[in-house]
Amino acid sequence: MKFSIAFIFFLSFLLHAGAQKIKLPAIISDAEKQTRLMLKEAASVKTTSNNPALVSPRTMEKGELKLVSARDWTSGFFPGELWFLYEFTGENMWKEQAEIFTKNVEAEQYDLTTHDLGFKIYCSAGAGYRLTKNKNYKAVIIQAATTLSKRFNPVTGTIKSWDNKKWSYPTIIDNMMNLELLFEATKLSGDSSFYKIAVTHANTTIKNHFRSDYSSYHVINYDTSNGNVLGKITAQGYADESAWARGQAWGLYGYTMCYRETKNKIYLQQAEHIAAFILNNPALPKDLIPYWDFNAPNIPNEPKDASAASIMASALYELSTYSKNKNRYRKTADKIIESLTNYYRAPVGEDKGFILLHSTGHKPANSEIDVPIIYADYYYLEALMRIKKLKDKKSLF
Image 1: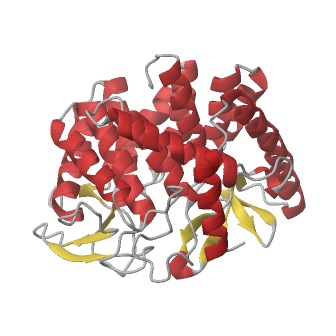
Image 2: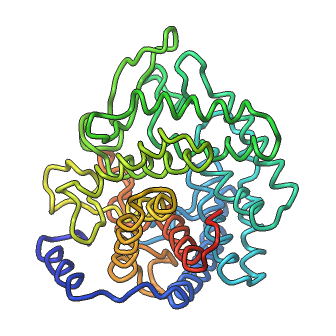
């Protein structure tokens, strides 16, 4: 379903009329029901496809659940969801399922072809280690960080994102999310080289990825002979100079996390600047669920991106614990979660078990437009867990 102008106005009316507040027990109960359905659907797909390499749900195509292999960058998110449900409920069934799906992606700790080891390994084995202190997960995290470090180039000062012939040495804003794996590996191993790579990458990204208004380019292409910037471009946004919504969310989350790990105020200030760009943007709708690109040409007749909203909400909850703007960030995150909960969730028992609808993956490639996507669900559950911990006055980590 595409969002019409009439629907947007109706949504605005509902929001102003007073949406239902966040009721965690009921929301988590619904999430459990959906995830049980997804487990059933995933088992059915694996059986009918006769492809054991398919290990993790990603999205829906033509009304059917799409599973991907462990090599796919999204393979760690569903295991992470299962760990969140175990954390919420304490039910051993969720722990057992989380262990099964995490094991399915553990071999990715050796994947030298990708920068996405943080997404694949830290969202799965990282969550498992946080909750169980299983020594195997610790070893997986350290090995994944070792593998990821091999993609770091000291001349460019960044970790290479993609291996392709289109660009010399591309680094994407998404890569900020994979730095958490490196920070954790230093804490677990005592090897400071991981920490130093993460900080260097974050500093280089501040220098080259952001415009004067603190919006972010998607891709920076570097010259490996001298570290110079060869181009500032987009792959998934509307245009090279546009602000791709999920890219802005990655930056917000990434620099908030970097401040947590380093206490370097430059990172806190960067996160606050990015938040200001997002929250003060005239293209941000009243329900605070962004269109897929802040500069998309046909707003409001453009697809929304619930995944970007989930990432933003989770980041804002954390940022609220560090910043003088804490009240605004917390209230804004609450409103995002209220919007997602009341108007973007799939009906219980439908949509193959996904929790959220209306995400946009890669619009320029006409891929995953206005569909459920697994990382939207992951960051939605993470945001809900952060709500719970804030209410309980517990550390978010």
